[in-house]
Length: 88
Image (tube, rainbow, N blue to C red):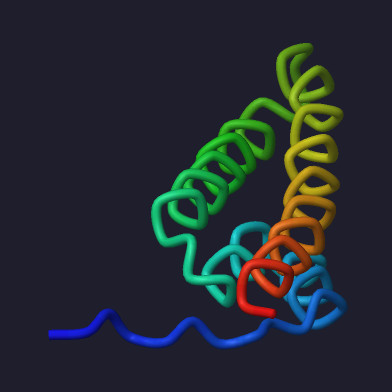
């Protein structure tokens, strides 16, 4: 059987989805494993940061969460463009 056709992606939509929730743009790009890793990392570190917010560790985790979030947005956009180049 033939492989399913790869559809073009909308880079701005992919990055907007990751802006809303880290990893969702990767899910839109059909990058299931990366989506799961980003979503799980953000969720787990977010829970830990909230739990320790009144202590020192929470303050250090907030920048890590911001980096994961920003990476997710950038990566979703970049990968959608890469997919589109491969489809064209």
